[in-house]
Image (tube, rainbow, N blue to C red; front, top):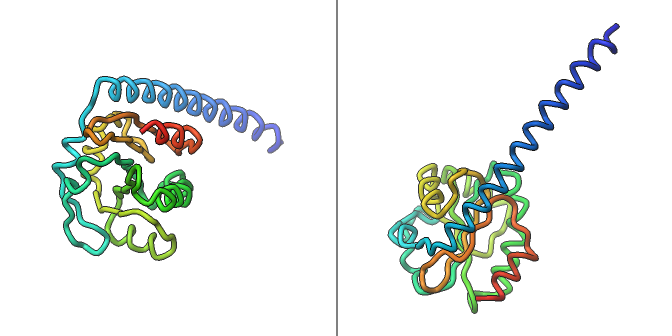
Amino acid sequence: MNKKVNKPRLAAYLIVAAAFTTLGAIAAVKQDTKAAAGAAAGNSGAALYAQSLNDLSGKPQSLAQWKGKPLLVNFWASWCAPCVQEMPELSALAAKDGGKRFHVIGIGIDSPSNLVQFTQKTKVAYPLYVGGMGATDLARGLGNTAGGLPYTVLIGADGKVIKTYLGKLKFDQLRADLARL
């Protein structure tokens, strides 16, 4: 009797899960389209450069120090599985380039203690800043209207947003975009 009762429930759960997956995919496609349109419209990184965020040692850092340099800004959190999964490859990419053609920075939407604990376990080859929950507004200003993570923004040396990436990075595409800098 229990098997008959569980099968309809399982089917209902699967239908609901499939519906949410479909809605999530639609939202991601729409967000990517909006982000691409925003980048094409020439959104500026001015709001980013106006910020001062603490580094992981608690020292305030002006993000204006990145003005005039091609910049890849990764918004992430230690509790975000896709963020954590992409960090080793993003770190390797940053270390390989060494700031010759572009720079990478990470802005953590998390508590300072969580970010510090994370970096004690995982080495990161680029500067990390503590943005806290307030950094979600900064990410929105750079095109992340969905508020999802990870969210990465490619900004040209002229301060204009070139491209945005919502979700886990596709590194082949990112490398191709970086090669065009």
